[in-house]
Amino acid sequence: MGAGMNVTTRHKTKYPGVFYRYSEEGGTGETEKVFYAVFKRNGKTVEAKIGGQYRHGMTPAKAAAIRAEYVTGKRLTRQEQRAKDQADQQAEQEKPTLARLWAAFLEAKQENKSVQDDVCRWRKHLHPVFAEKTPAEIITLDVDRLRVRLTKSGLAPETVKHVLVLLKRIISYAVVRGLCPPIVPSLLHFEMPKVNNETTEDLNTEELARLLDAINNAKDWRAAGLMRLAMLTGMRHGELSTLQWKHIDLERGFLRIVDPKGKKDASIPLNGAARRVLAELPRTGSDFLFSGRGGKPCDLRKPIAAIKKAAGLPVKFRPCHGLRHFFATTLASSGDVDLHTLQRLLTHKTPAMTQRYAHLRDEALQRATGVMDSFMEDVG
Image: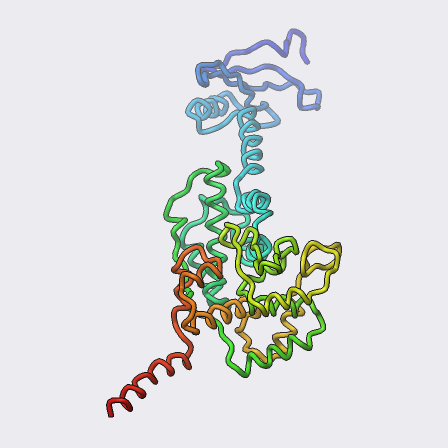
C-alpha cells in the first residue's frame, strides 16, 4: 500500500452517502478502492460495504445506484441478507407442515383405540399428498382431488371418509393447540363421500351352521372363543380382544365393558350360552382372556379370517362386526326386545345408532303379513 494510505480513512465522492477506503483485500498486493454506502435504516445509521474497484468493477456511480436501492428497501445489505437467510432457514425448520402436526397429533393420541388405523391411513393416503404442506397451503380443491382419487381406486366410501376425517382431526388438533395459525373455516368443511350407514350384516340358517362348524373345528381356540362371544354378546372386536377376567362375574351373570367406544363403562348381562363359553375358556395366567406372548392381548385377525374362509362366508362379511350385527338383528327381529334395551346391550350412545336394527328379517315380515291370512280365514 502506498505511503499515507490509511485503510480506515474515508474518502468522499461526489455522490452523497458514498465513500471509499483503500484496501489490499484482493490478495494481489495491489491497492484498490473499496466503496461503502451510509444511510439511515429504522432511525439508525448503517454503513454497508458495496464492492471493490477491481474485484467487482465498482465505480462511484454504481455505488450510488446501489445505495439508492438500500435506501428504498429494494436491496438488502450483506448483513441484512445473512440475517434474513438465517430467519428463513429457522422458519423452514419450524414450518407447521402436516408431517410435523401429524407427529404431535400421534403422540397425543397414543391411547386412542383407533391409532393403528390412523397410522395406516396417514402413511398410505395423506402423507404422500400433504406431508410437506402446511394447513394454510391446503385448498379445498386438493382435498377434493384426493377424495376423487381414493374413490376411483376402489376404496369404500366409508374408508374414504375415515381418511378425510383424519385430515380434519389433525388440522383441528393443531389449530386448537396453537401449533399452526387459524385457517379458513371452509377447509374444515370439505365435501365428504356419501356413506350408507344403514347397511347391516346378517347370516342365514345355512351360513350360521357353516360358521358354527368352522368355529368348532378352528385350530386357534382364542379366535374361536372370541367369535363365539361376539355372536352371543354383540360386543365389539376391540372390547373382546382386551377383555380381562376381573371384569367378568359368572356368578351374577354380568360382564363389565371398560372404556368402550362410547367412552362410558357399561355392564351387560350374560346369557347362559355366553356364560358356558366363558367357563370353558382356558386360564393362561394372563389378566386377559385372549392373550399372546407376555400375557398381552394378541392380534387374532388372521385366525379369525381363516374361520371365515372355512365357513365360506361372503367376502364382504366382516367376521366380528358382522356377528355384532347378527346379535342385534336377531334380538330386534324376535319381537321380544325393544330398541331401548337393545341400545343398552350394544352400548350405543344414542337411539339413532340402534335405529338401523328396527327392520325385521324377511321371514319375520312374512309372518307379520301372514296375520291377514288368518284374519281372512276367520271372516270367510
